[in-house]
Length: 185
Image (cartoon, rainbow, N blue to C red):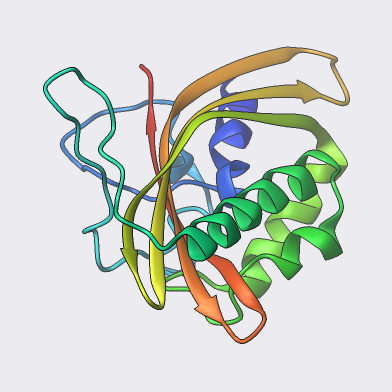
């Protein structure tokens, strides 16, 4: 079971970043044995400034984003989710930034290959909201449910949480450059 929970964390952009060391989570992706500090498990996010703000009603506050850019960012997020759910590694890697903010692209791909071979995973995002926007960088908040089925045992684990996906604008469009995940435990 712990292995499946670890994979659920691993599969959120092949893993989650370590947001707050004061919060204990025994099912953390940080239990991994990958050695590189900029690995697919914690994505080596040095700038931990990603996040979101809630209004008085507990709703996520949306950033002011030009309409065409908002559509492009939302489309990139949709492609990221759909490529992952299809387990299409080439398609998935096409939406990952060439030089992400803090993780090793090749290591991320390797971890994802192993995960696709061992697990059937489905991302189900909701409440997608662009929470920060600059001309070359954006952050998209989403609530996410992750269903992980172990291909060997058939065991199913459900995880949920909130995440902020960091996008970087490259020549061919918006690409995923990082991710912060907060589990609902």
